[in-house]
Image (cartoon, rainbow, N blue to C red; front, side):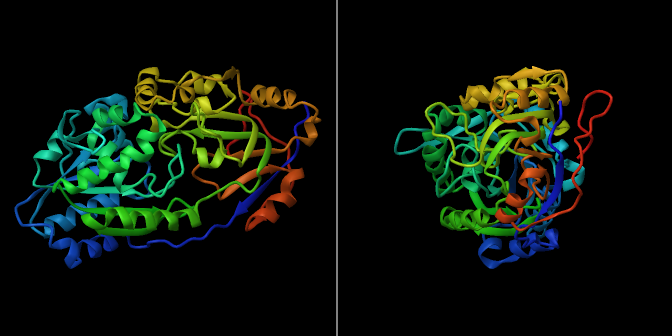
Amino acid sequence: MDFPKVVKIRQTFPRPRVEDVEGTVRDQLRREDIASAVRPGMSVAVTAGSRGIARIDEVLRAVMDGLKEMGAEPFIVPAMGSHGGATAEGQVEILASLGVTEEACGAPIRSSMETVEIGETDRGIPVFMDRIASEADGVVVVNRIKAHTDFRAEVESGLLKMASIGLGKHAQALALHGYGVEGIRDFMVEVGEEVLDSGHVLFGLGIVENAYDEPATIEAIPTREIPNRERELLRGYMEMMPVLPISDIDVLYVDALGKNYSGTGMDTNVIGRFRILGVEEPESPNVKYLIVGDVSEESHGNALGVGLADLTTERLAGQIDRNAMNANVVTSTFVERAKVPMVLSDDREALETAVRCNWGVPPGETRFVRIPNTLHLEHLYVSENLVEEALANSDAEVVSEPEELRFDAEGRLEKF
């Protein structure tokens, strides 16, 4: 089959960034409205999540150093709902894969899936907290603030989510996800606010990343100010959020999905698919056929999000750890995302299948886009017939001559 020729383009996005990560964190913690919340001798639990936050090891190390300067005794608690197979050991392994270890951060990691109930919301939703964190003298909530992959709202993925589903572990995830999107869009915020009002949280540390997977803002936030400030920071993120320069795509090939790229394996905001029962799909982009070729090593076989694709490869299917993926998906209740799509032997066969099924479009006229993952969108390939459209829709430039899609002896696309 004759595939369309492709051209590599480079997109340019707004790029505010924090150069001195550790210095910035320490300066933030020295602010009077933050430092006044910490007393010498306090034991302080600091949250660490499962997302691939840029330079998170440096952030956490600086938090530990800053708290030690104040005379506190900090430690890390994994705060990631049901991830890591919903086990204490699995969550520590996920942190290690992100570079978050006791040695790197200079503090012990205390992991448990045991929780305690610390209250309930006005709706009667129980509020849970990691038992170890609840027994500390205080908690510091650390997380990245960004768009959620299941819904649009004023508060999406950030400190309130970490305070609720993160600190509440599997128990809180079950309590909220049982209500579907309403649970994680509306009830999650209410649970998070109850945690903030409980007196356990000393302050939050919010991180906003630019489109280059770099920290753009790192800000310590007094507990009472977290809800309003998180809303403001989310609006700032939306202005920097990476997007595809093409809205109408016949075939989108994603080299790899992974929990380190998105909580849903592939960012739904990028691919234009929620795949949630009863939830309307995003208007853009419109992708006829989505192929995903691999799962990242950092995901440890959790291929959550494979159900967002239409076709995949034996390479990916053979790596799926169904226990890890199913634990994550059953907790969320969004079962479509764990359905394994049509499995083809390799990239070539998957592409041939998608192109053949693209009704009425000659292979050479396929509107084709290839990205490495849904987090890194600076460089991408587009079919030759999309170049002008891509340049018109974004701040982009062409960085290669038109070339044929190249496959190795095993039918795998050559590295990006």
